[in-house]
Length: 243
Image (cartoon, one colour):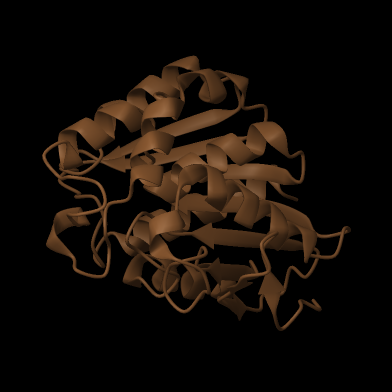
């Protein structure tokens, strides 16, 4: 599979990515991270390595303003990352069948993109954010945009653009109801960042084919002892719906 060595978004910002080749060279799984994350988070690395070993080529990406990608973190929003994802797909040869797997806010990016862009053939959400306004109110309502930071991380300032985007989207349930591609939703029962009720609500309105897996005792990032289970479930889902 010939992928470009450099990918830019519509603003001309270079996006950092890592490619994991696999035997199935007619398809590609794009892996997207959550807020304050990047392509090198342990979950995404483990999934890419495990799934590539099973034959699925994977592309880990850092959205603009995150990790080694160009851009300002303050500009990072769900809406901007949707545009980033579409720019990434623009760089992939048209004959390649694309699946997308997003964690947390990256899951929200995937849902919105899949209903706008038919190039997403299969969707996987890991601890996917659905109730975006509730997420803001729960996690950051006491933080002043432009002054405070996300979870006391100095490199992750809370911007008004991010707050406005979350509150304007409000809920992804309308988008979830419009998803037409096979959708695998995985969540941990003990997630204290995005509650598993977000996945339950999305699953209830989603069309078939769909599958929900709530992993007992798992937190927001699941943990390395759970990675093999997630890899197995994604492998089975891709094998069923991305032949």
